[in-house]
Image (cartoon, rainbow, N blue to C red; front, top):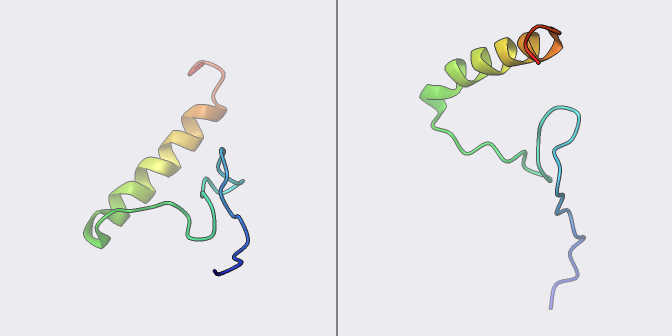
Length: 51
């Protein structure tokens, strides 16, 4: 049996990634759109009027 470290996390890290591989399972052609969405979400999240 392999003794691998447990990297399971219930919450994402500071970059929004889960575990060792990040947890992003999106086609590469969609990544620019996903990154734009992430950027705009972070801006909205920091805006008190968004809450």
